[in-house]
Amino acid sequence: MKAIYSIFCVNFTNQIKSMKLYPFGALLLTLLSCNGLTEGQGGKYASPKGYDLNLPQKLHVRGSMQEISGIVHHEKDGQFMAINDEEGRIFKMDVNQDEPYENWKFGKNTDYEDIVHTGKDWLVLKSNGSLFLIQDVFTDSISSLEYDAPVKGKREFESAYYDPASNGVVIICKHCEVDKKTGLTSAYRFDMSTLKYDSLPFFRIAVKDIAKNMESKIKNFSPSAAAIHPLQKRLYIISAINHLLVITDLKGQVIEVFNLPQTRFRQPEGITFAPNGDMYISNEAGEGSANILKFTYQPSR
Image 1 (tube, rainbow, N blue to C red):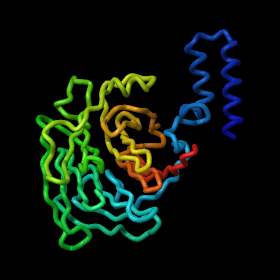
Image 2: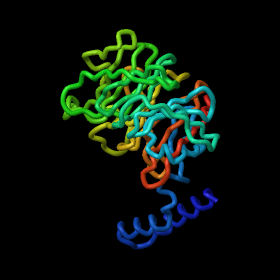
Image 3: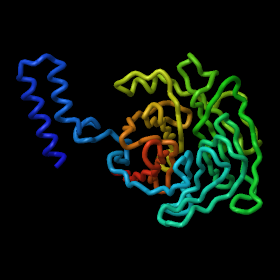
Image 4: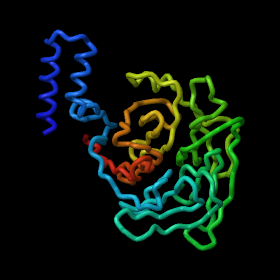
Protein backbone atom coordinates (compact mmCIF):
# COMPACT_ATOMS: atom_id res chain seq x y z
CA MET A 1 0.00 0.00 0.00
CA LYS A 2 2.83 2.43 0.83
CA ALA A 3 4.45 1.69 -2.51
CA ILE A 4 1.20 2.39 -4.38
CA TYR A 5 0.72 5.58 -2.39
CA SER A 6 4.27 6.68 -3.19
CA ILE A 7 3.74 6.14 -6.92
CA PHE A 8 0.49 8.08 -6.76
CA CYS A 9 2.19 11.02 -5.04
CA VAL A 10 5.05 11.12 -7.51
CA ASN A 11 2.68 11.03 -10.50
CA PHE A 12 0.40 13.60 -8.91
CA THR A 13 3.35 15.90 -8.21
CA ASN A 14 4.49 15.65 -11.82
CA GLN A 15 1.00 16.56 -13.01
CA ILE A 16 0.98 19.61 -10.74
CA LYS A 17 4.33 20.71 -12.12
CA SER A 18 2.82 20.75 -15.61
CA MET A 19 0.00 23.01 -14.44
CA LYS A 20 0.32 26.77 -14.60
CA LEU A 21 0.21 27.45 -10.88
CA TYR A 22 2.23 29.78 -8.77
CA PRO A 23 5.00 27.89 -6.90
CA PHE A 24 3.25 28.23 -3.55
CA GLY A 25 0.00 26.86 -4.93
CA ALA A 26 1.75 23.87 -6.45
CA LEU A 27 3.60 23.18 -3.22
CA LEU A 28 0.41 23.44 -1.18
CA LEU A 29 -1.46 21.00 -3.40
CA THR A 30 1.39 18.54 -3.26
CA LEU A 31 1.58 18.68 0.53
CA LEU A 32 -2.16 18.28 0.88
CA SER A 33 -2.20 15.26 -1.38
CA CYS A 34 0.94 13.55 -0.06
CA ASN A 35 1.17 14.56 3.57
CA GLY A 36 1.58 10.91 4.48
CA LEU A 37 5.13 11.15 3.15
CA THR A 38 6.30 13.91 5.45
CA GLU A 39 8.60 11.33 7.09
CA GLY A 40 10.56 10.98 3.85
CA GLN A 41 9.96 8.92 0.74
CA GLY A 42 7.70 6.08 1.81
CA GLY A 43 8.08 7.19 5.43
CA LYS A 44 11.69 5.95 5.47
CA TYR A 45 14.55 7.47 7.43
CA ALA A 46 18.27 6.89 7.21
CA SER A 47 19.57 4.57 9.93
CA PRO A 48 22.92 3.69 11.55
CA LYS A 49 24.67 0.58 10.29
CA GLY A 50 23.02 -2.52 11.68
CA TYR A 51 19.67 -0.87 12.45
CA ASP A 52 16.45 0.19 10.80
CA LEU A 53 14.96 3.18 12.64
CA ASN A 54 11.79 2.65 10.62
CA LEU A 55 11.03 -0.76 12.18
CA PRO A 56 10.91 -0.49 15.97
CA GLN A 57 9.25 -2.94 18.29
CA LYS A 58 7.22 -0.91 20.77
CA LEU A 59 7.41 -2.13 24.37
CA HIS A 60 4.68 -1.19 26.84
CA VAL A 61 5.54 0.91 29.90
CA ARG A 62 3.23 0.85 32.94
CA GLY A 63 1.64 3.97 34.40
CA SER A 64 4.16 4.40 37.22
CA MET A 65 6.94 5.12 34.69
CA GLN A 66 5.31 7.63 32.35
CA GLU A 67 8.13 10.06 33.21
CA ILE A 68 10.85 7.51 32.45
CA SER A 69 14.11 9.40 32.05
CA GLY A 70 16.89 6.81 32.08
CA ILE A 71 17.24 3.08 31.36
CA VAL A 72 19.85 0.31 31.50
CA HIS A 73 19.35 -3.10 29.90
CA HIS A 74 19.48 -5.64 32.71
CA GLU A 75 19.97 -9.41 32.90
CA LYS A 76 17.73 -10.52 30.03
CA ASP A 77 15.64 -9.19 27.16
CA GLY A 78 12.66 -7.16 28.34
CA GLN A 79 14.17 -6.23 31.69
CA PHE A 80 15.50 -2.77 32.47
CA MET A 81 16.68 -0.79 35.46
CA ALA A 82 15.19 2.68 35.22
CA ILE A 83 14.46 5.95 36.96
CA ASN A 84 11.77 8.55 36.49
CA ASP A 85 12.06 12.33 36.61
CA GLU A 86 10.93 13.04 40.13
CA GLU A 87 11.29 10.11 42.55
CA GLY A 88 14.51 8.99 44.19
CA ARG A 89 13.77 5.40 43.28
CA ILE A 90 15.33 2.75 41.09
CA PHE A 91 12.76 0.65 39.27
CA LYS A 92 13.22 -2.86 37.92
CA MET A 93 11.04 -2.98 34.83
CA ASP A 94 9.97 -6.22 33.20
CA VAL A 95 7.97 -5.16 30.16
CA ASN A 96 6.81 -8.74 29.61
CA GLN A 97 4.92 -8.82 32.92
CA ASP A 98 1.84 -6.95 34.15
CA GLU A 99 2.82 -6.81 37.83
CA PRO A 100 3.88 -3.48 39.40
CA TYR A 101 7.56 -2.74 39.00
CA GLU A 102 9.77 -3.63 41.93
CA ASN A 103 11.53 -0.50 43.21
CA TRP A 104 13.92 0.79 45.85
CA LYS A 105 14.06 4.27 47.42
CA PHE A 106 17.65 5.60 47.43
CA GLY A 107 17.15 9.36 47.98
CA LYS A 108 14.78 12.27 48.32
CA ASN A 109 12.51 13.36 45.48
CA THR A 110 14.21 15.73 43.06
CA ASP A 111 15.11 15.98 39.36
CA TYR A 112 16.88 12.76 38.31
CA GLU A 113 17.86 12.27 34.70
CA ASP A 114 19.84 9.08 34.03
CA ILE A 115 21.03 5.79 35.48
CA VAL A 116 24.37 4.05 34.91
CA HIS A 117 25.71 0.56 35.58
CA THR A 118 29.47 0.03 35.55
CA GLY A 119 29.18 -3.74 35.79
CA LYS A 120 29.73 -3.41 39.51
CA ASP A 121 28.22 -0.15 40.74
CA TRP A 122 24.96 1.67 40.09
CA LEU A 123 24.88 5.48 39.81
CA VAL A 124 22.10 8.00 39.20
CA LEU A 125 22.54 11.43 37.62
CA LYS A 126 20.82 14.53 38.98
CA SER A 127 20.07 17.41 36.61
CA ASN A 128 22.76 19.65 38.19
CA GLY A 129 25.49 17.12 37.39
CA SER A 130 25.67 15.45 40.79
CA LEU A 131 26.13 11.68 40.73
CA PHE A 132 24.59 9.43 43.37
CA LEU A 133 26.56 6.25 44.03
CA ILE A 134 24.01 3.70 45.22
CA GLN A 135 24.80 1.64 48.32
CA ASP A 136 23.21 -1.75 49.11
CA VAL A 137 21.12 -1.69 45.96
CA PHE A 138 18.17 -4.11 45.76
CA THR A 139 17.90 -4.26 49.55
CA ASP A 140 15.80 -2.52 52.20
CA SER A 141 19.01 -0.82 53.40
CA ILE A 142 19.59 1.02 50.12
CA SER A 143 21.17 4.49 50.39
CA SER A 144 23.37 6.76 48.31
CA LEU A 145 26.46 8.99 48.37
CA GLU A 146 26.35 12.26 46.40
CA TYR A 147 29.27 13.66 44.40
CA ASP A 148 29.04 17.21 43.02
CA ALA A 149 30.16 18.08 39.49
CA PRO A 150 32.97 20.69 39.16
CA VAL A 151 31.08 22.80 36.61
CA LYS A 152 30.76 26.51 37.27
CA GLY A 153 27.71 28.64 36.58
CA LYS A 154 24.27 27.49 35.52
CA ARG A 155 24.24 23.92 34.29
CA GLU A 156 21.86 21.17 33.30
CA PHE A 157 22.62 17.53 32.53
CA GLU A 158 20.43 14.69 31.30
CA SER A 159 22.89 12.09 29.98
CA ALA A 160 25.41 9.83 31.67
CA TYR A 161 27.14 6.60 30.60
CA TYR A 162 29.97 4.33 31.68
CA ASP A 163 33.18 4.28 29.65
CA PRO A 164 35.13 1.08 30.46
CA ALA A 165 38.24 2.30 28.61
CA SER A 166 38.68 5.18 31.07
CA ASN A 167 36.91 3.52 34.01
CA GLY A 168 34.77 6.62 34.33
CA VAL A 169 31.15 7.71 34.28
CA VAL A 170 30.83 10.49 31.72
CA ILE A 171 28.13 13.17 31.89
CA ILE A 172 27.36 15.48 28.96
CA CYS A 173 26.05 19.04 29.25
CA LYS A 174 22.55 19.72 28.03
CA HIS A 175 22.80 23.43 28.87
CA CYS A 176 25.97 24.68 30.57
CA GLU A 177 26.97 28.30 31.01
CA VAL A 178 30.62 27.40 30.35
CA ASP A 179 29.65 26.33 26.81
CA LYS A 180 27.66 29.46 26.02
CA LYS A 181 28.67 31.06 22.70
CA THR A 182 31.54 28.58 22.25
CA GLY A 183 29.83 26.28 19.78
CA LEU A 184 30.82 23.35 22.00
CA THR A 185 29.08 20.80 24.21
CA SER A 186 31.26 19.67 27.12
CA ALA A 187 31.49 16.27 28.79
CA TYR A 188 32.99 15.53 32.23
CA ARG A 189 34.37 12.28 33.63
CA PHE A 190 33.82 10.88 37.12
CA ASP A 191 36.74 8.58 37.94
CA MET A 192 35.44 5.33 39.43
CA SER A 193 38.86 4.59 40.98
CA THR A 194 39.15 7.82 42.96
CA LEU A 195 35.43 8.68 43.10
CA LYS A 196 36.29 12.20 41.96
CA TYR A 197 35.41 14.31 38.93
CA ASP A 198 38.22 15.44 36.64
CA SER A 199 38.68 19.21 36.87
CA LEU A 200 38.76 19.66 33.08
CA PRO A 201 36.29 18.43 30.44
CA PHE A 202 36.81 14.85 29.24
CA PHE A 203 35.96 16.00 25.70
CA ARG A 204 33.98 18.65 23.85
CA ILE A 205 31.65 18.05 20.92
CA ALA A 206 31.84 20.69 18.19
CA VAL A 207 28.34 21.70 17.09
CA LYS A 208 29.71 22.67 13.66
CA ASP A 209 30.74 19.03 13.13
CA ILE A 210 27.14 17.97 13.73
CA ALA A 211 25.90 20.67 11.36
CA LYS A 212 28.15 19.35 8.56
CA ASN A 213 26.13 16.14 8.62
CA MET A 214 22.73 17.87 8.47
CA GLU A 215 20.65 19.63 5.87
CA SER A 216 19.26 22.12 8.39
CA LYS A 217 21.11 24.50 10.70
CA ILE A 218 21.84 23.81 14.36
CA LYS A 219 23.09 26.34 16.91
CA ASN A 220 23.23 24.22 20.06
CA PHE A 221 23.39 20.52 20.83
CA SER A 222 21.40 19.38 23.87
CA PRO A 223 21.88 15.68 24.69
CA SER A 224 19.22 13.83 26.65
CA ALA A 225 20.86 10.35 26.85
CA ALA A 226 23.99 8.48 25.79
CA ALA A 227 25.46 4.97 25.74
CA ILE A 228 28.43 3.17 24.22
CA HIS A 229 27.62 0.49 21.65
CA PRO A 230 29.00 -2.76 23.12
CA LEU A 231 30.23 -4.11 19.76
CA GLN A 232 30.95 -1.03 17.65
CA LYS A 233 32.65 0.80 20.53
CA ARG A 234 31.06 4.05 19.37
CA LEU A 235 29.11 6.55 21.47
CA TYR A 236 25.42 6.97 20.64
CA ILE A 237 23.97 10.28 21.86
CA ILE A 238 20.31 11.23 21.51
CA SER A 239 18.75 14.66 21.81
CA ALA A 240 15.03 15.14 22.38
CA ILE A 241 15.32 18.89 21.70
CA ASN A 242 17.28 18.55 18.47
CA HIS A 243 15.46 15.36 17.36
CA LEU A 244 18.82 13.78 16.59
CA LEU A 245 20.91 10.67 17.09
CA VAL A 246 24.58 11.67 16.98
CA ILE A 247 27.27 8.97 16.81
CA THR A 248 30.80 9.88 17.89
CA ASP A 249 34.00 8.12 18.79
CA LEU A 250 34.84 7.77 22.48
CA LYS A 251 36.47 11.22 22.46
CA GLY A 252 33.44 13.06 21.13
CA GLN A 253 34.50 13.34 17.46
CA VAL A 254 31.35 13.32 15.35
CA ILE A 255 31.05 10.38 12.93
CA GLU A 256 27.41 10.31 11.84
CA VAL A 257 24.14 12.15 12.47
CA PHE A 258 20.59 10.80 12.04
CA ASN A 259 17.16 12.41 12.37
CA LEU A 260 14.78 11.12 15.05
CA PRO A 261 11.29 12.07 13.80
CA GLN A 262 9.05 13.37 16.55
CA THR A 263 6.16 11.29 15.23
CA ARG A 264 8.03 8.18 16.38
CA PHE A 265 10.46 9.49 19.00
CA ARG A 266 8.07 11.70 20.95
CA GLN A 267 10.46 12.57 23.78
CA PRO A 268 13.54 10.31 23.80
CA GLU A 269 15.17 10.48 27.23
CA GLY A 270 16.95 7.13 27.56
CA ILE A 271 19.15 4.81 25.50
CA THR A 272 20.75 1.46 26.27
CA PHE A 273 22.09 -1.61 24.48
CA ALA A 274 21.83 -5.34 25.06
CA PRO A 275 25.14 -7.24 24.89
CA ASN A 276 24.25 -8.44 21.36
CA GLY A 277 23.84 -4.85 20.14
CA ASP A 278 20.04 -4.53 20.25
CA MET A 279 19.25 -0.87 20.91
CA TYR A 280 16.50 0.46 23.16
CA ILE A 281 15.32 4.08 23.26
CA SER A 282 12.80 5.17 25.89
CA ASN A 283 10.30 7.99 25.37
CA GLU A 284 8.60 9.98 28.11
CA ALA A 285 4.84 10.23 27.86
CA GLY A 286 4.46 13.83 26.71
CA GLU A 287 0.97 14.06 25.19
CA GLY A 288 0.69 10.30 24.73
CA SER A 289 2.01 7.37 26.75
CA ALA A 290 5.58 6.38 27.53
CA ASN A 291 7.23 3.55 25.64
CA ILE A 292 10.51 1.79 24.94
CA LEU A 293 11.42 1.22 21.30
CA LYS A 294 13.54 -1.83 20.48
CA PHE A 295 15.75 -1.85 17.37
CA THR A 296 17.19 -5.27 16.58
CA TYR A 297 20.87 -5.24 15.69
CA GLN A 298 21.72 -6.88 12.36
CA PRO A 299 25.43 -6.31 11.58
CA SER A 300 24.95 -7.33 7.94
CA ARG A 301 22.35 -4.62 7.32
